[in-house]
Image (cartoon, helix red, strand yellow):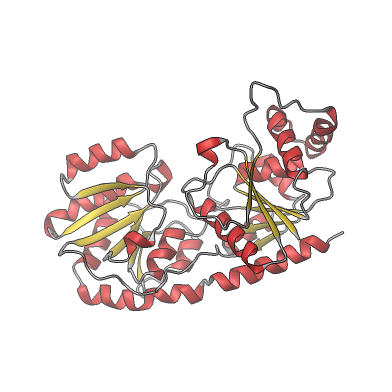
Length: 382
């Protein structure tokens, strides 16, 4: 079976990690020829995660070079017909990229196409009109909470997909109510090896978060919450791992409210390298499709404090068992929750003992089995 995976780029995001995990797992099982196709060129298309050498890498070549990349009427005409039939005139401005996607995908002669992330999903489904090749689209966020620039187009084109995979049942149900063949498959994440805690490097207590430094992660709330309680916990430091457009403003806020107590460490491509001796993990995101970093923290035996952001996180974190879920969306409520765990060694120890159960509750093996069924069914569909 030839499987072509399409994603915009392979930078340091959760969807990109899932894409690479799937590609590597499928390449390792044998019987499948895997190609990852990215629209980004050069550095933007390079992967920050290790890719199995058996996986072929290709670029669509967007934007076109100065030498052309001419598009024929045979490529463009079926795309236009498909957009007209789906009543998606807003995508006409995307016609060149969609046509290039069509050409690049067909050049891989796929039996099944797997697309990742909403905008790429929509473009790929438009590109594959009239080809007869089944497309599986992967949603990576909670579509019930997040608006989308092409909302009508997404609904219309998702109905054409062989399947749309969502990381949680609540998201799949939301899509199904809109006529989409949706399936819930938790993200396939690789457990730490060996699954044991690393010894402490010094006497500090480490509160850690891993997140893109962008508005949806609400890290300003975390900075304010930690600053409220930092004076009561002089042995604790907050370490922020990740990068993004808000880094400079967050660093200024941290220096103003809690100088010397909040460290911005930049992006790391291995969460386990920084979670091994963390004392507590925190997430302040207002929306999550699954919560990769939360899963990884739990898998390392790190207790967690998370802001309530919907059903996916409520499934992942067992409130009072392996962490705390903060229901109120304020810095005061988050600070109180953090303080209650930071100041209670017994609670942290109890949470940590139960945390690694996430590896079996949401195992990579069960996710890959569900994907195997989906791929096999798609390949034999008429």
